[in-house]
Amino acid sequence: MGTSPPGPTGEPLFGSSRRYADDPFRFLSACEEAYSGVVTFDLGPVETYLLTEPEHVERVLVADADRFAKPEFQDDALGDLLGKGLLLSEGQRWREQRRLARPAFQMDRLTDFANDIVAHNERLLDGWEDGTVVDVERAMTRVTLSVITDLMLGTDLSDERVQTIREALEPLGARFEPDPVRFAAPTWLPMPGDSTYDTAVETMESVIRDIVAERRGSEGDAEAGEGPDDFLSLLLRAQERGEQTDTQIRDEMMTMLLAGHDTTALTLTYSWYLLSQHPTVEQQLHEELDEQLGDEPPGMADVRELDLVERIINESMRLYPPVYVMFREPVESVVFDGYTVPEGSAVMLSQWAMHRSERFWDGPEQFDPGRWADNRDRPRFAYFPFGGGPRHCIGKHLAKLEAKLILARTAQEYRLEYTREGEPDLWPTLTMHPRNGMPMQLHER
Image (tube, rainbow, N blue to C red; front, side):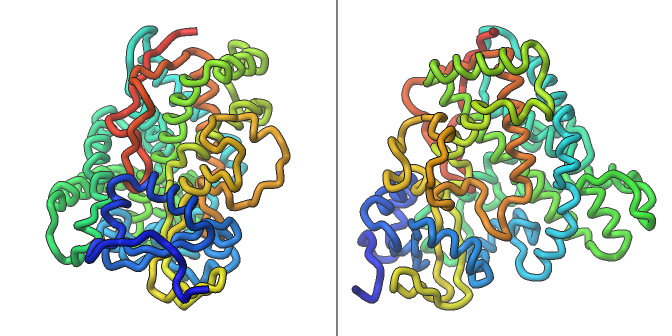
């Protein structure tokens, strides 16, 4: 066995970054198919190791999680955006913030959320009309933003604030689209788009400052620990105890506002697209909803009975995982399959590549919610849309509850028909968006 894992041949200076930037989805799938196990290539100057075995993913995320940190090369732009919130913080700070946030996501709170989620969705449906064409990504973003700000920030977004946030999202996303020049350039070198990105960050900070200012003084008796248990209230009461700074609150709110709505909105967006392409599954969904719910909106007691809704959500996240790739950095040298992955390199885990691998899935390119009805013994980390281990997504259960309720309630009222030809053109940013939205025509049932 060679001293270095196999991988695609790169070019001087850029390594494989041009091919990756041109189409990261095709590049990742090609690497998984050609070099199963451990794959190595350079993204500019960054020595990168793609791991494509479920047991390797489990080691990085679970068994050996303490040996892997968030990578330093993500610290600049992403650090400017999210700071040291739950997504990027490490060590004792992360453990303290995670402990502080946990009550906001406890299951006993989730049971109270169902009616609120459906109520936000009703506001969306009230503005829909039969035969009109809507950008479903924009619509799902609107409702999931409303849900997360209500349940976790304790505020109701005005239409003006929603529009402000939406206008900031595109330049924020564009900054993280793979760019071979950025891969190769030093981090201090100014690049096109930097000022637009900085302005968008400032816009988001302004929104957060306004929300926090409105909430101060409304969290109840801080010393007695009374008041609501949304995440912002928990942070504000902790600040009264001297445990949080304004910067920490800003970082957590930015993380919650962006990460808390985006993946759910995308899961729903791709679910609607897939249903529109598979009318038999869509019909089966309507039959389940008619049988289980009739004309009544879904509630918490209905969620477990909606089996097909659950399978559609799972299959959507398999085929179109909103988080399509994750990076970690070894804090010491680690060995995989006899190959040494050195300290300070980049370890890449790709949901896209593994969710679509023939090694783990029958007909991996096919939309088949029925695959989730069996008890097939698949490797645990052949599917990991929410990550895994101690740093798994803290909002996983809320996100799935939200997606099920919104999908079910909307499908009670409408069929959605995709209006473009061919598959969506995917836009790789921090998450995987449909480029130029997802236009769909509404058909009232």
